[in-house]
View 1 (tube, rainbow, N blue to C red):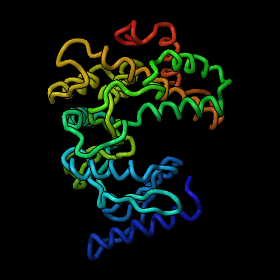
View 2: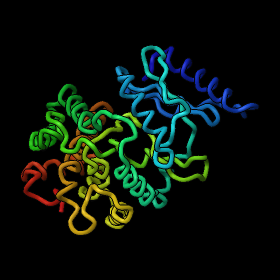
View 3: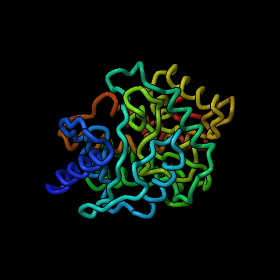
Length: 313
């Protein structure tokens, strides 16, 4: 959670930015959209202010913001490509977009997400960027698991599955692609309609944007499908739309799993690690979804990634 001073001052900055953009701002209640250790987001009218995670590198963040500014049809552009500092946190300002409705799964924009990813992956990076940060997020999840609940029975298959992943997926070696532009943390919460409420879908959240293997951006839905958490028809819609848009992460036809297996395994391990940490912190057993990803890790532990075309197929 934020410090007692950061949230009210971030809220004031959001209000000031909104008033600078719009005369006669229709001031309603300012909303806190997210308040987590890795990011705090508040909204005032049509303006959003985000305090990024502590120790965010301002040079890397500025490069990512600059890239978003140059890709307005794919990424939501920031209001200013230069972050400001507030209580040792990097703060950025954005236009508000309408998010995906979590209560209407049938309306999930799988085709839009896939098409945006394909366009992103086909676009040369408009400015020099650091590596995509997906593997680093997986490392942080495993570190949290080891430091907090490493002795939990469910942690055993998760940690074992982690050891079987190649070094690049564990951020212990360079990634196998150093040129393809990647989002780095794709899920449906990373899409908004802008202009709100009915504009085209755009990708948001540039914290993990960088160059790397594009299969990583398909890994979360691939993992959900492999774990039985994403219906086959939705996975097919997503994969077909990506291929139709010329996405380079997988072959244009045929088996996609040789390109997706390692990223999907890694995202499954990451998800399972965080699920265990969350359940233990709440003092409850794993729920059905959390149990499914841990079970997937158990299955993964019996066969190395390079020997199977799909860990749950």
